Image (cartoon, rainbow over all chains, first blue to last red; front, side, top):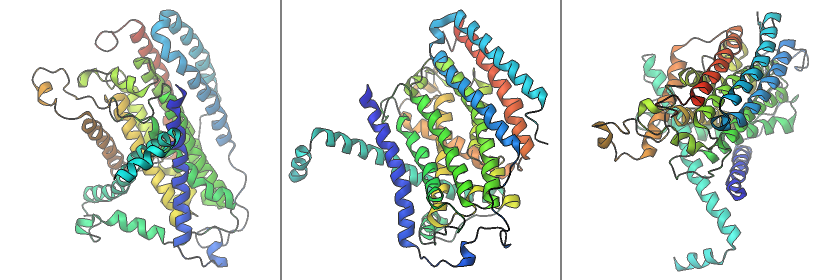
Length: 118
Length: 351
């Protein structure tokens, strides 16, 4: 059972190694002649006048929070979906109720304008 | 020859297993890399012809060596790390995007027996790894310390997480229909001809999954994250040489992954479209399943390019509206519809 997951683990390591190897290769093969202008952050030819880590729109934050709720919901649906065949109507009704509660929250956020981007 | 056999037998059992797994990983990754290289070539050629140009035709006959030349060029380009950047994160970001794009193939079945790790939580693993990609993007944008990169990363992250919800719900629909997380069993649940596959009962989910896939990979028409005309290149504006190439590879590997998964979950994977048909069925019996899978994958890969050549870029508010206000409600409703069909054993698919 668990040895089935060994290739998965090795594959992840290979993925990281491939990325690392390519970047190291790039460093080894490419020239390295830095100067002040070249190393300045790109801003269409202007000098960057302030730190780029500035304030940003709160709606991005809102989207992230909403995402957590819905993603948890998906994680919760996964085991249910696998055994729905055996749960039958009871399982379906239970999940309909659960999704219904989520949808009420969804309608609320929609009406509150959390999904507007104008 | 005999020497190598002796050497192999002298190795400890565990090491033999690991080497054998590594060999099989290389058998998956090497053709994948080649496919990525020629996908970029195909993209330039196909979009070229769609715009009545001929595309690359200088390096090698008909431009066939173009991707090789591109790779060599990128390898010898200087890697610039901007002064304001956070060095460690700056270099970690490309690795964080390529590793999941490759590792997701670990559980991908290329045929009923051709799978590296036939794990029962295959789909869960895929969902987890495709979600990892967003970290590469947001870390790259943050570490660059450039305004364009930062804006691109913010947009991209919000877009990716929004579409991931629709994508996740579409996967749940597939799960309900197949009753298993194992990718081999998901294909086997679609046993039969083209009208038995899940694209028909799950039609809305199929369309939503693929469109979300296009949005997840930040491809046109959802490419506001790198909109050339507004924020130059978005999150990877400050990357050069191989660091850029790794992002590029990851994006194309992800496109291939999305295409292959769509073929697997909605288009019957390696099953023949004429399976069980009176006349055409036996006629196409000799075609190996792998060929069918590859053909189906290529169709979706072509769609990615076709979209890019045809559609103008969406506005950001339109993207968010499509994701949250159209896709999520449709998927939630359709999960319940599929649930009903499964519980009451709708004939043809779920009996």
